[in-house]
Image (cartoon, rainbow, N blue to C red):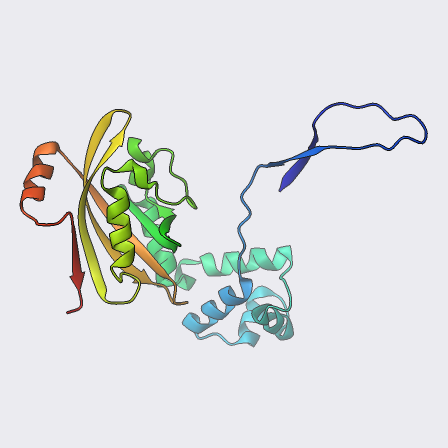
Length: 232
């Protein structure tokens, strides 16, 4: 949604005078596009439901389901509400949806990332992640701030270039240092590539904060800050 706000108060012009208005767009909400056709196809694929049965559950006709899935029609607001309620049921969730829910409620420092060009974007954040002082300004949809870590940019590029989205990497073990408000935080993280049912790649990153001595001990036990575990 957006609001049109005049830049200044104005009076009516004299007869024959053009009236020019300048408006500022104040966006108060991020609009997220949902591919409802794919959402319905994915749900039917994992639940074994045909279009007629799905139509009955949503209170619409089978031809309407077909048009939504084909992308030739957009569902009405009441149908969208019915779709959300249907797929939100615990017995109807996909394993991936279950993973996101588990991450969101976890007290540990965990995030789910998605490729975004030469960076990655936050998709889900755990309660432990959101409550940690270092990450208090991070929001879903943002890309990772490479400058936050002394070797963060190099580690991130190495992760992306490692083939982590090609199916060859089983996990990435990394340690790093990050500055926040004049303090240094020491981290150990295990990043695991995950592929959703629609073929999209994600990174599940579980992190543990270390004290300085444990970090130095772990750093001395390895040759590289980032260790790749592969299928071979």
